[in-house]
Amino acid sequence: MGAFPPSTSPPARLVVLVSGSGTNLQALLDAAEDPAYGAAVVAVGADRPGITGLERAERAGVPTFVRRVQDFADRVEWDRSLTGAVAEHRPDLVVSAGFMKIVGKEFLARFGGRVVNTHPALLPSFPGAHGVRDALAYGAKVTGCTVHFVDDGVDTGPIIAQHVVDIHEDDTEEALHERIKTVEREALVHVVGRLAREGYRIEGRRVLVP
Ligand code: GRF
Image (cartoon, rainbow, N blue to C red; front, side, top):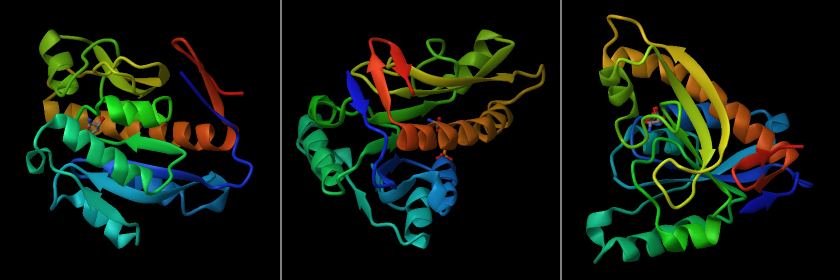
């Protein structure tokens, strides 16, 4: 499905896609301040304007772009435009960090095997937009986060890293999500840095980092 050589001339170029508060993006921006991290955020894209994620990028001096689905005739046109906007920044890796849209065929044809997503549950349990709520409603005792490559399914791509978070008896969705996000940010920063510095291969469902 994909491979990425260890960067010979770091830093690796990251385009980060966001839809909301962008705390995962912020964690990447902060990590990338250290040249030893091996990756730099070269652009931030969003599916909606006016979000904190975009403000974080602007504060960091990183270029941004917005592609709203409703501004296009259909999802195919939206996907084409998003693909073009991301491609302009020549990413080595694309990071979907709380990006609440499913990318399409053209996007994956161009960037497949290079798109990393973070999901707030232990996949393959509780995929989709409400992973935290669904784990809580199911009565699970543990949940967590999954960092994985994106394929053409919903949260189905090869898994890179997972971390477990306990569910408390009196948890609310908000409280649980905040605890997951603390772990998730650290996991995402760690994974992206490793992939960028060391390279990787994807063989079937296995992600091999040398
Ligand atoms: C994360 O928990 C992500 O997994 C989920 O939405 C949250 C995004 O948080 N899809 P933030 O925008 O990075 O703060």
